[in-house]
Amino acid sequence: MSDDFSLDELWCKCGCGACNIHPESLFQLQRFRSFLGRPITINSACRCIKHNRSVGGSLWSTHRSTASIQCTAYDAKVKDMSCLEIMEILEKHDKKEFWKGRGLYPHENFIHIDSGHSKMTRWIRDATGKYEYVDKF
Image 1: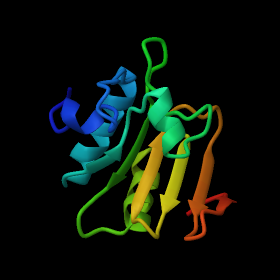
Image 2: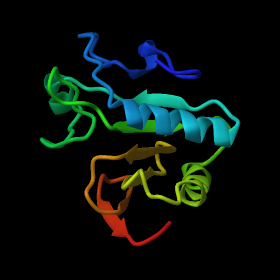
Image 3: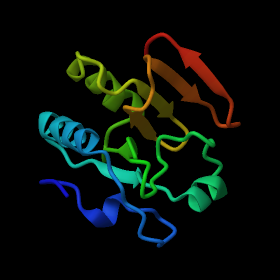
Image 4: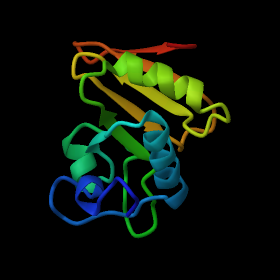
């Protein structure tokens, strides 16, 4: 799929094989990986409608991947880095704000990034599952 990301990392975790990735989002993910200079582990990218529902994803989740819907979202982590450290680097790197959806999940130590939001949206999810929307990290 790209220099550092394989199909195995990106397709739906339920095993259905859904993997319709928006090409520019994958290009930008690879660009960030190259800038970071460290491996990025993808927890979740493409999700079929059924799997998205089973993991509690929203009806309009940017993870959705069907024949007509391209996934524009990635849940990711980097070994030996906190999710806040990763996000702070992304915030400095992504000057053109390609990634308009940016979420921190500190209790699971991963970030969510997506290019499906129409305006910059940042959030933090706490251990209880409550979301707090913030202006910056």
